[in-house]
Amino acid sequence: MWALAVLLGGLGLAAPVLHGPRQSPQIALTFDADMTPGMLQMLRMGKVRSYNPTELYRLLEQNQVRATFFLSGLWIEAYPEQARALAQNPLFELENHSYSHPGFAQPCYGLPGVAPARKADEVLKTRALLEGLGVKNRYFRFPGGCYAPEDLALVERLGLQVVHWDVAGEDGGQADPKVIVRNVLGRVRNGSIVVLHSQGGPRLPATLPALRELIPALRARGFAFVKLSELLGSEGPFRLR
Image 1 (spheres, rainbow, N blue to C red):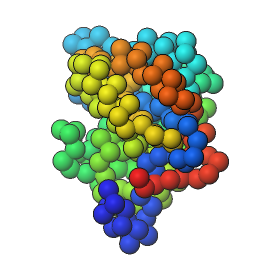
Image 2 (cartoon, rainbow, N blue to C red):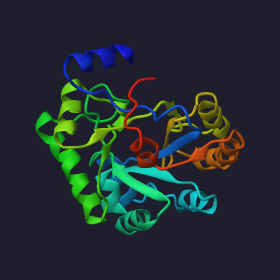
Image 3 (cartoon, rainbow, N blue to C red):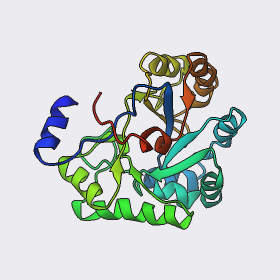
Protein backbone atom coordinates (compact mmCIF):
# COMPACT_ATOMS: atom_id res chain seq x y z
CA MET A 1 0.00 0.00 0.00
CA TRP A 2 2.78 2.44 0.88
CA ALA A 3 4.69 1.60 -2.30
CA LEU A 4 1.58 2.31 -4.37
CA ALA A 5 1.03 5.59 -2.54
CA VAL A 6 4.62 6.65 -3.30
CA LEU A 7 4.13 5.75 -6.96
CA LEU A 8 0.91 7.71 -7.18
CA GLY A 9 2.46 10.68 -5.42
CA GLY A 10 5.27 10.68 -7.96
CA LEU A 11 2.66 10.85 -10.69
CA GLY A 12 0.91 13.75 -9.00
CA LEU A 13 -2.08 11.60 -8.02
CA ALA A 14 -3.67 11.24 -4.60
CA ALA A 15 -4.04 7.67 -3.34
CA PRO A 16 -7.53 6.50 -2.39
CA VAL A 17 -8.86 7.59 0.98
CA LEU A 18 -8.55 4.68 3.41
CA HIS A 19 -9.79 6.11 6.71
CA GLY A 20 -10.87 9.21 8.57
CA PRO A 21 -9.27 11.08 11.48
CA ARG A 22 -7.97 8.85 14.24
CA GLN A 23 -8.66 11.21 17.13
CA SER A 24 -12.36 10.43 17.64
CA PRO A 25 -14.13 7.06 18.11
CA GLN A 26 -16.18 7.40 14.94
CA ILE A 27 -16.32 4.80 12.17
CA ALA A 28 -18.07 4.58 8.81
CA LEU A 29 -19.87 1.38 7.89
CA THR A 30 -19.91 1.16 4.10
CA PHE A 31 -21.73 -1.40 1.99
CA ASP A 32 -21.02 -2.28 -1.64
CA ALA A 33 -24.05 -3.27 -3.72
CA ASP A 34 -22.43 -5.22 -6.55
CA MET A 35 -24.26 -6.14 -9.74
CA THR A 36 -22.56 -7.63 -12.78
CA PRO A 37 -24.33 -8.60 -16.02
CA GLY A 38 -23.93 -12.22 -14.96
CA MET A 39 -25.62 -11.56 -11.62
CA LEU A 40 -28.44 -9.74 -13.38
CA GLN A 41 -28.94 -12.71 -15.72
CA MET A 42 -29.11 -15.08 -12.72
CA LEU A 43 -31.77 -12.83 -11.17
CA ARG A 44 -33.87 -12.69 -14.34
CA MET A 45 -33.64 -16.47 -14.80
CA GLY A 46 -34.86 -17.01 -11.25
CA LYS A 47 -31.64 -18.72 -10.18
CA VAL A 48 -31.19 -16.07 -7.48
CA ARG A 49 -34.25 -14.93 -5.56
CA SER A 50 -33.06 -11.42 -4.77
CA TYR A 51 -30.07 -9.11 -4.49
CA ASN A 52 -32.06 -6.72 -2.31
CA PRO A 53 -31.74 -7.73 1.36
CA THR A 54 -34.45 -5.64 2.99
CA GLU A 55 -33.70 -7.19 6.38
CA LEU A 56 -30.27 -5.56 6.32
CA TYR A 57 -31.76 -2.07 5.85
CA ARG A 58 -34.32 -2.81 8.56
CA LEU A 59 -31.59 -3.86 10.98
CA LEU A 60 -29.68 -0.62 10.39
CA GLU A 61 -32.85 1.42 10.82
CA GLN A 62 -33.90 -0.38 14.00
CA ASN A 63 -30.48 0.29 15.50
CA GLN A 64 -30.22 3.84 14.12
CA VAL A 65 -26.95 3.01 12.35
CA ARG A 66 -25.79 5.64 9.89
CA ALA A 67 -24.20 4.04 6.84
CA THR A 68 -22.98 4.67 3.30
CA PHE A 69 -23.95 2.48 0.34
CA PHE A 70 -21.78 2.27 -2.78
CA LEU A 71 -24.26 1.23 -5.47
CA SER A 72 -23.52 -0.19 -8.91
CA GLY A 73 -25.67 1.24 -11.68
CA LEU A 74 -27.09 -2.13 -12.67
CA TRP A 75 -28.24 -2.61 -9.08
CA ILE A 76 -30.00 0.77 -9.14
CA GLU A 77 -31.73 -0.17 -12.40
CA ALA A 78 -32.75 -3.57 -11.00
CA TYR A 79 -34.18 -2.04 -7.80
CA PRO A 80 -35.20 1.56 -8.57
CA GLU A 81 -37.80 1.80 -5.82
CA GLN A 82 -35.41 0.47 -3.19
CA ALA A 83 -32.66 2.80 -4.42
CA ARG A 84 -35.03 5.76 -4.09
CA ALA A 85 -36.03 4.67 -0.58
CA LEU A 86 -32.38 4.47 0.44
CA ALA A 87 -31.74 7.91 -1.07
CA GLN A 88 -34.59 9.38 0.96
CA ASN A 89 -33.58 7.76 4.24
CA PRO A 90 -31.72 10.31 6.43
CA LEU A 91 -29.64 7.54 8.00
CA PHE A 92 -28.03 6.64 4.70
CA GLU A 93 -26.02 8.16 1.88
CA LEU A 94 -25.41 6.71 -1.59
CA GLU A 95 -22.22 6.76 -3.65
CA ASN A 96 -20.81 5.34 -6.89
CA HIS A 97 -19.55 1.76 -7.34
CA SER A 98 -19.38 1.78 -11.17
CA TYR A 99 -22.15 0.71 -13.53
CA SER A 100 -21.56 -3.01 -14.23
CA HIS A 101 -18.95 -3.82 -11.55
CA PRO A 102 -15.97 -4.74 -13.74
CA GLY A 103 -12.36 -5.00 -12.64
CA PHE A 104 -10.75 -1.76 -13.79
CA ALA A 105 -7.37 -3.50 -13.48
CA GLN A 106 -6.70 -7.21 -13.92
CA PRO A 107 -6.66 -9.67 -12.32
CA CYS A 108 -9.47 -8.67 -9.96
CA TYR A 109 -11.09 -11.52 -8.01
CA GLY A 110 -12.56 -13.05 -11.17
CA LEU A 111 -14.38 -9.88 -12.23
CA PRO A 112 -14.54 -9.28 -16.00
CA GLY A 113 -12.37 -6.51 -17.38
CA VAL A 114 -13.51 -3.32 -19.05
CA ALA A 115 -12.12 -1.64 -22.18
CA PRO A 116 -10.30 1.64 -21.45
CA ALA A 117 -12.72 3.51 -23.72
CA ARG A 118 -15.65 2.37 -21.54
CA LYS A 119 -14.24 3.22 -18.14
CA ALA A 120 -15.54 6.79 -18.05
CA ASP A 121 -19.03 5.52 -18.89
CA GLU A 122 -18.82 3.10 -15.96
CA VAL A 123 -18.46 6.10 -13.67
CA LEU A 124 -20.70 8.60 -15.43
CA LYS A 125 -23.71 6.32 -15.97
CA THR A 126 -23.96 5.57 -12.28
CA ARG A 127 -23.41 9.21 -11.36
CA ALA A 128 -26.37 10.08 -13.62
CA LEU A 129 -28.50 7.39 -11.98
CA LEU A 130 -27.62 8.73 -8.53
CA GLU A 131 -28.45 12.27 -9.61
CA GLY A 132 -31.80 10.96 -10.85
CA LEU A 133 -32.42 9.89 -7.25
CA GLY A 134 -31.61 13.39 -6.02
CA VAL A 135 -28.16 12.37 -4.79
CA LYS A 136 -25.04 14.49 -5.22
CA ASN A 137 -22.33 11.96 -6.01
CA ARG A 138 -19.02 12.74 -4.29
CA TYR A 139 -17.19 9.43 -3.85
CA PHE A 140 -16.25 6.47 -6.03
CA ARG A 141 -15.10 2.98 -5.05
CA PHE A 142 -13.41 0.69 -7.56
CA PRO A 143 -14.96 -2.79 -7.78
CA GLY A 144 -12.74 -5.17 -5.86
CA GLY A 145 -10.52 -2.23 -4.98
CA CYS A 146 -8.72 -2.87 -8.30
CA TYR A 147 -7.31 0.04 -10.29
CA ALA A 148 -4.27 1.32 -12.15
CA PRO A 149 -2.85 4.85 -11.79
CA GLU A 150 -4.58 5.94 -15.00
CA ASP A 151 -7.92 4.78 -13.58
CA LEU A 152 -7.40 6.90 -10.49
CA ALA A 153 -6.54 9.87 -12.69
CA LEU A 154 -9.72 9.31 -14.72
CA VAL A 155 -11.97 9.32 -11.66
CA GLU A 156 -10.29 12.45 -10.33
CA ARG A 157 -10.80 14.19 -13.69
CA LEU A 158 -14.48 13.30 -13.44
CA GLY A 159 -14.63 15.16 -10.14
CA LEU A 160 -15.00 12.26 -7.71
CA GLN A 161 -12.87 11.24 -4.75
CA VAL A 162 -11.84 7.59 -4.55
CA VAL A 163 -12.62 6.05 -1.16
CA HIS A 164 -11.64 2.52 -0.24
CA TRP A 165 -11.23 1.16 3.32
CA ASP A 166 -8.87 0.12 6.09
CA VAL A 167 -11.12 -2.64 7.51
CA ALA A 168 -12.54 -5.40 5.31
CA GLY A 169 -15.12 -7.78 6.73
CA GLU A 170 -14.30 -10.17 3.89
CA ASP A 171 -17.91 -11.33 3.80
CA GLY A 172 -17.89 -12.40 0.13
CA GLY A 173 -18.23 -16.18 0.01
CA GLN A 174 -17.98 -16.42 3.79
CA ALA A 175 -20.58 -18.68 5.42
CA ASP A 176 -19.47 -18.19 9.03
CA PRO A 177 -20.57 -14.87 10.56
CA LYS A 178 -18.02 -15.23 13.36
CA VAL A 179 -15.20 -14.93 10.82
CA ILE A 180 -16.63 -11.63 9.56
CA VAL A 181 -17.07 -10.37 13.13
CA ARG A 182 -13.50 -11.35 13.96
CA ASN A 183 -12.16 -9.65 10.82
CA VAL A 184 -13.83 -6.37 11.72
CA LEU A 185 -13.26 -6.32 15.46
CA GLY A 186 -9.62 -7.32 15.05
CA ARG A 187 -8.83 -4.37 12.75
CA VAL A 188 -11.18 -1.52 13.58
CA ARG A 189 -9.74 1.72 15.00
CA ASN A 190 -10.88 5.29 15.44
CA GLY A 191 -11.70 6.70 12.00
CA SER A 192 -11.93 3.33 10.28
CA ILE A 193 -13.84 2.83 7.05
CA VAL A 194 -15.35 -0.67 7.16
CA VAL A 195 -16.37 -2.40 3.93
CA LEU A 196 -19.07 -5.07 3.76
CA HIS A 197 -21.59 -5.96 1.05
CA SER A 198 -25.28 -5.23 0.81
CA GLN A 199 -26.52 -7.01 -2.30
CA GLY A 200 -27.26 -10.25 -0.52
CA GLY A 201 -27.54 -13.33 -2.71
CA PRO A 202 -25.88 -16.72 -2.41
CA ARG A 203 -22.32 -15.45 -1.89
CA LEU A 204 -23.20 -13.41 1.20
CA PRO A 205 -25.08 -15.72 3.56
CA ALA A 206 -23.37 -14.49 6.73
CA THR A 207 -23.34 -10.69 6.37
CA LEU A 208 -26.65 -10.07 8.13
CA PRO A 209 -26.03 -12.37 11.11
CA ALA A 210 -22.54 -10.87 11.42
CA LEU A 211 -24.04 -7.39 11.59
CA ARG A 212 -26.36 -8.47 14.37
CA GLU A 213 -23.24 -9.19 16.43
CA LEU A 214 -21.09 -6.35 15.13
CA ILE A 215 -23.42 -3.43 15.83
CA PRO A 216 -23.67 -3.97 19.62
CA ALA A 217 -20.03 -5.09 19.86
CA LEU A 218 -18.75 -1.94 18.15
CA ARG A 219 -20.96 0.27 20.28
CA ALA A 220 -19.73 -1.52 23.40
CA ARG A 221 -16.22 -0.46 22.40
CA GLY A 222 -17.39 3.15 22.28
CA PHE A 223 -17.58 3.60 18.51
CA ALA A 224 -20.21 5.84 16.94
CA PHE A 225 -21.50 5.09 13.42
CA VAL A 226 -21.36 8.02 10.99
CA LYS A 227 -21.84 8.48 7.28
CA LEU A 228 -18.71 8.61 5.17
CA SER A 229 -19.17 12.30 4.40
CA GLU A 230 -19.47 12.99 8.14
CA LEU A 231 -16.28 11.05 8.84
CA LEU A 232 -14.27 12.79 6.12
CA GLY A 233 -16.02 16.09 5.65
CA SER A 234 -14.72 18.24 8.48
CA GLU A 235 -11.02 17.38 8.36
CA GLY A 236 -10.44 16.26 4.80
CA PRO A 237 -9.13 12.96 3.42
CA PHE A 238 -6.76 10.61 5.22
CA ARG A 239 -5.18 8.42 2.62
CA LEU A 240 -2.50 6.37 4.37
CA ARG A 241 -2.66 3.86 7.18
